[in-house]
Length: 230
Image 1: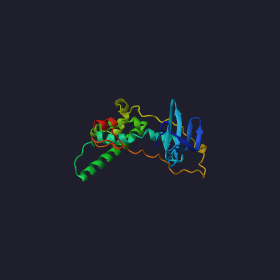
Image 2 (image 1 turned 60 degrees about the vertical axis):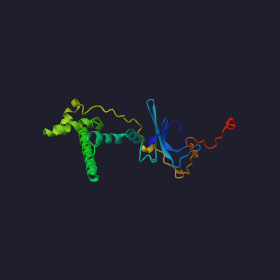
Image 3 (image 1 turned 90 degrees about the vertical axis):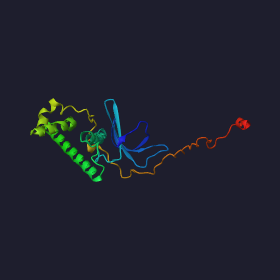
Image 4 (image 1 turned 135 degrees about the vertical axis):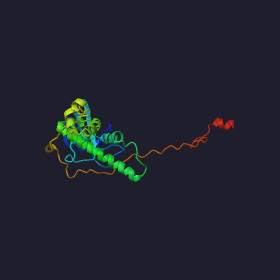
């Protein structure tokens, strides 16, 4: 899944749905010397001044809706947040040992703790009736051990004091605003539509080989005056 780059040439094969600037259909990428071998799906919609265009190789709208495509694209950096949690908050930036067995123990320990923390985050969000991303994971990691050490119900305390302590706060994440199309309005792909073809790629230009230092490049000729000087 990716965005459609500006000035990318394409040819529409089939239209699932189109209404103004809302588009969902199958296309061939490339119309000149470079042409892709497999059809892809293009979805397009406008939110305010922003016209969003996404490409995906999931060609069936029933498997991946326009709204889901937009949601997944917005969350494409979630893996980086997971790495941040492991390295910065769970100490995975330092290795306990150089032995493989100990490294694996450390890895699985950090992953299990991370999953438990995410589960606690979901529980706090459920009880507080907020979006999970409105619950700060770093602050949750700070306060949970303190309340647990005092023998208090840490999750209940998060719900009760969360807003005052900043654990529960408005999320800064981009909110997905995409059309939610009724599946009944989508036009099925005819049986005779071909989704694969022979790809065409432009011929690669040969790399220029630089001559060794102190030697003339291939094809270089001395100027006439140089010969006279000799």
